Image 1 (cartoon, one colour):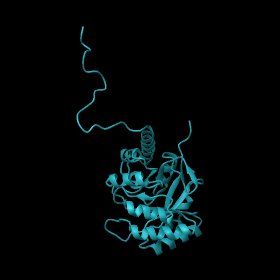
Image 2 (cartoon, helix red, strand yellow):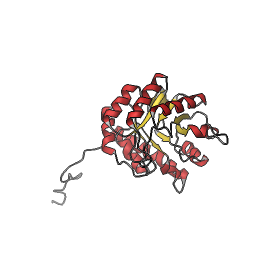
Image 3 (spheres, helix red, strand yellow):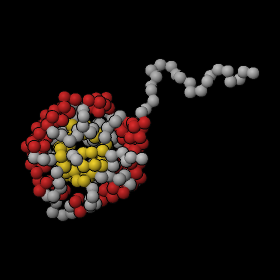
Image 4 (cartoon, one colour):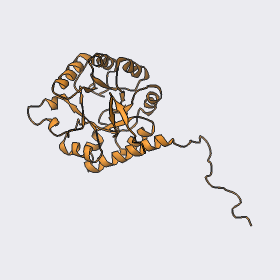
Length: 255
C-alpha cells in the first residue's frame, strides 16, 4: 500500500500532526514525537535564543523546526524575527504570526500578507497563521505562501471548530495545504477537521494541558489518522429528511 504523504515547501511528511510548543516543556515535546509522531514542531525565536536552556536542545534531530514570529505586531517585525531565526540555524521554514489584538489574539490578515510576500522573496517556506477568509487566503497564495493556517477558534481556547464553514471554503477553493491551527481542544475535533480534507492539524494547549500528556498525544495521532482515512474513503451521504433502512422492513415474518 502506498504511504499517504503530503508535501510542504518541497519537503515530504507522513505525519499530519504538528506540535505547537507555546506551552513548552520537555515532556510535551517527547510525547509529541514518540506518541503522536510529530515531524514538525514550532518554536518561539525568543526560546531558541535564550541564554539559559534552549528549546533547540530538546527537539530531536530529524524533526523540522518551525520558528514562529510570535510577538510581531506588523509585517516588518515579523520579517526581522524570521531572519533572526534563520541566522540561529532554524532553517527556512517560518510560521508567520502577526497579532496586535491583545484581547482575542486574532491574526492581522493584512499585515500577514505583507510579511508573507517579503519572506517568500527571500526563499523562506512561509506558513501564515490567519483568520479564515477566502480573499485573504487567495492573497496569501499569490504572495507565495506554502500553505494557509486558519484558526479553528481563539488561541488556547480549546473550543474546537468554531470556524468550520469558513475552513471548508478554503479547503474547497485554495490549491494549497490547509493546516488547522489554534483552538482544537479534543482528538474528536482534530478527526472532524481531517474529515473535511485539511492537510494537517496543529495542537498545543489541548495536549499540554491534558491530565496525561502522553496519552493525549497518542489519542491525537489516532484521531488524525482516522479522520484522514475517512476523508480518503469518502463519507456516506446525509439525508436531510426521514430515514433509509439498511435492512428490509417488510416480509421477513411472512410464511
